[in-house]
Amino acid sequence: MRLFLTGFLCAALVAAANASDIAAIDEAAHAYRAANEQTIVDEFVELLRIPNIALDTVNIRRNAVFIHDYLERYGLEARLLESPGSPPAVYAERLVSGAERTVLVYVHYDGQPVIPSQWATDPWTPVLRSDLVENGGEALPMTAPFDPSARIFARAAGDDKGPIIAIVHALEALDGMGREPSVNLKFFFEGEEEIGSPHLREMLSAHADLLEADLWLFCDGPMHATRRPQLAYGVRGAMGFQMTIYGASRPLHSGHYGNWAPNPIAMAGRLLASMRDDEGRILIEGLEDEVREPSGAELAAIERIPAVDIALRQSLHLGHTEGGGERVEAAILRPALNFRGISGGGVGSESRNVIVPETIVSVGVRLVPDQTVEHVQGAILRHLEGQGYHVVLEEPDADYRAEHGPVIWLRWGSGYPALRTDFDHPLAARLAEIMNTWSDGDLVQLPTMGGSLPLYLIREVLGVPVLILPIANHDNNQHAKDENLRIANLWNAIAMYAVTFASF
Image 1 (cartoon, helix red, strand yellow):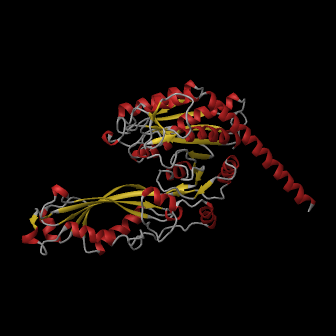
Image 2 (tube, rainbow, N blue to C red):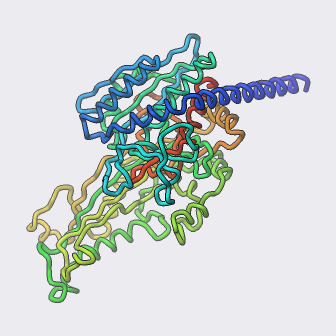
Image 3 (cartoon, rainbow, N blue to C red):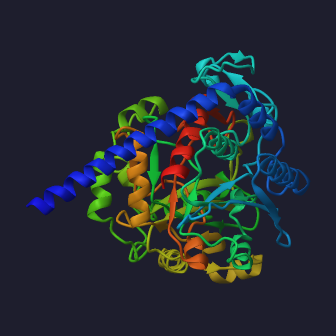
C-alpha cells in the first residue's frame, strides 16, 4: 500500500508539473502573439495572395518557393523536394540535441479551384470581416489589434495555409522564452493534396530516410463545432465512379414514344434508389463485408463529445437528418454513398418534351477501416449486373447497345482506403494528454474525421502512426465560396503548436 501511494503521489506531482509547464508555455505564446499580431497577419495575407490551384504549375511553384524562403527566414533548414510531374513539396527540420523522438508535421499548401463570381470578393485578395458574409459581416481594416472573432476571407485561409504561419510563430514564441522543442521536428508541406496526392507515394518512397519519424501529425480539417480543440485519429477513405445509362440513340418525342422507349432518367432514379435507402443505409450486398467495427474506446469517446446535431440542423435549415436520429460523429464511422450529380435533359426554360438518349450519374463513396477499393468496386459491379444491366468499361457504340439491352458505361475514379490510429497507441495517448491539459479538459477526441486524406500512404510506405490536429473553425467554408479563418483560431493554433512541440 505504501508503494502504491508513493507511485500515485509521484504521478500526481508529475501531472501537476506538466499542467503548470503547459500553462506557462501557453501564456508565453499568447504574449508573443499579442506583441506580433500585425506581422503574423501580414505574412498570412502575403501567402494567401498567391493562387494555389495544384494544376496551375506556375503559381503552385510560387507558393512552394515562398514557403521555402519564409521558413529559412525564420531559421529553419528548408529544401524543395522535386518529383517529375508534381508540384514541389517543401521540407524543413528543426533538430534538437538529445531529443529521443521525432514528430513530422504535415500541411498542404494547395487549395480547391474557385469560381470568382460566386465570392463576395476576389478569392486571392484577402479581406478581414467581422463575421460570415451571410451574417452581414462588415469589412474591417487589416490592422492590429485584431478582433479575435473577425475572419480573414481568401482561398486556402481555412484549408490549409494557416498552420504554416502558426507553426513558424509557435517556434518563435518558444525561442522567445528560451525553450527548445522537446522533440526533433520535421515539416512536410505538400502541393497536390486537393487533387488526391497522385505523387505522394513516389515522394515518400524516394525520401523515406529524410521523412523518417515516430509520428506524423496532420494539420488539416476543422475543429469541433463547439470551437473546442479536436484530436482526430483517422479519416475515411474515398473513391468514386461515373455511370452513363443509355436509352435510344437520339432524343425521342415523349408523346409518340412515352411508355415504350426506355427513359434513362427514370432508369437512373430506380438504380440509385436500389443502392441506398432514405436513411443513408447502403443496400449494395457485400459492400460492407470488410468493415471493422468501432472499438469500445472509440464509441465511448463519441459519447463524451458535446452533441451538436440540433445546432447543426438549425444552422443548415434541415427539417430532418438521415440515420434515424444517429449523431453525426457516429454516422461517419459507417461507409457512405453520395450521389454527387446527375445530368440528363433540362429543367426550367431548357426542359423539352423528349425522352433523352442518355443520363450520366456521378457517385462518391466514403470508406472506413478495413475496406479496400477493390472489394467495394467488385460489390458495386455485381450490384449493377444484378439490376439487369450489361456493364462495360469502355464507351459502347450504338450497334453494341442495340445487341445487349440495358447498358451502363462504368468509369472508375481514383480511390484510397481509410486509416484510423488506435486510441491506446502510446504516442496518441501522450498527445491526447497534452491537449486535454492545455484545454482544461475540453479536448474532443474524434475516432474518424468525415473527410478523406491519403493517410494510408504514410502507414504503408513509412510504417508510422498518424494523428490529425486541426486548427480551422468548423464554419470555414472550405472548398466553397468565401472560405475563411477566424483570427482566434490562428491565435490559438500558435499556442497549441508551441505547447505540443515543447511538451511532447
